[in-house]
Image 1 (cartoon, rainbow, N blue to C red):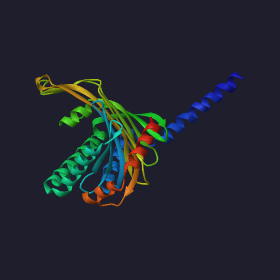
Image 2 (cartoon, helix red, strand yellow):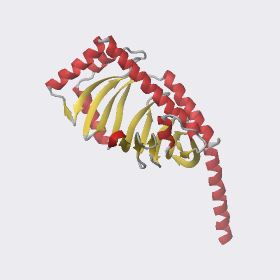
Image 3 (cartoon, rainbow, N blue to C red):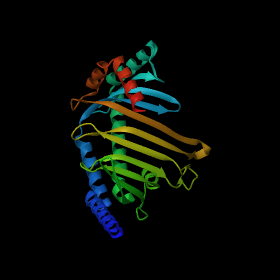
Length: 284
């Protein structure tokens, strides 16, 4: 009987090892490179979406409706700290949107800020294959889980690269589509700027990016957490405490202009904010 159980155990271990090998048939670094390729190229041909965003920052909560356009997202504030805007707040929000639509300068600034954000995101994603070393950490909910740590041979030059390179964490990759499903990072050392004279980000900060598939080809950010602290020049404290939850994704026509996006916002009344609040309460 003892020999039988030893044989069964040996076969089980061999089968587990074979299954793990089959689940990740390429080196982790190569998988990450393919994922980044998919993410960056999807960025050029993604669809356009309408959705709600609940933002927590500095002890306040704001719920906005957002529509994506070719000139960047257009948003409308619906709830502040869980309450609908009063008449003065609604007028102020309407005037803000009208000013954006009526001012070429405001529209140019909006496009410039949107383009800069998109480039920044692209630069950070592009760091993943070379800035870190990866090891396979198993399967989880249809995803390959990869553990990463800084690659000591990577020459981090920019501020963004230096901050990101000082992190370790985990990356979840959709095993079927090779798309980024989740990224967790933890700052494992202080990051100094100007030898600490200009500023410092403190060890222990962390972030989480969680994504969801909204169509056959599109993935959207579902949750974003950023918790960083530090010190800037003249001892000013840096505190970055941000939490975002997104949902209610509805595809809209591609190539919308800002005015068209604003018109779609007008079609979503107070009921959409109440529906979003109910969805948020359900997800917590």
